[in-house]
Length: 335
Image (cartoon, rainbow, N blue to C red):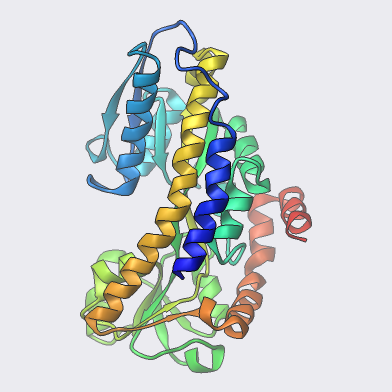
């Protein structure tokens, strides 16, 4: 695993350095005061640090000509922030993109589109086909897309080591109703129950369900490490958030300032690919040290291939959400 992270770091280093001189330190002439926000996780967190880094670096590289007010959970949840971005009440956010305003953003939890970070960096990075789709969708709704934040791959916590449909048969787990997560795990052989997130520990403790799906190792650590005995890293989807800017706010920036913003965001997102995988591995180690049996399907290629094939049975449903044209683009690009 360490070798894979090192290799990924080398690849992404080229991505970071390739565009490092695309904007000058004194770009532009206009003054701006911008509001930037992240609400999904409170500080300290890697995502909160990302918006602070963007604000600090832009302010420094423009000698204070562009300044920021940084906000967190005090402004509300991510749904409210999505509305505020669309109305121009805040300028930049790093949060999930709400399917309430455009169901196509369900693609930010695309079932088994990718199962490792190297491929994820390729397709969601600045030159990736998913990044191109996200730019198009954002523009159509009054936003400027700057980049994908990788929160991490997901799996399931259980009291049995279910890694195949045969082993999963008869096991009831809780799933989020968001997106296609519940359908992924039904295809993987589980019985799925939709329950509020706050009820998960009680539901597992009382036997209403055996485990929970749709979160990663960090969620398992924070929510059920003393309740479940196994964590199986199915890598069923890669949870993404978006760094977006209100389109009018973006258009008010001069071209050199736009280039500066994008350069810094590209660097932040490239570094996140490395740190996301490292965090994932750290939490799986913590779970193992705590006494859980941790199984990562990437270490069992045949099982991962089977899970991928079964999980992709949800793709016709995804096509209904994002449209045939987008789905054709994705299939062709993967080939």
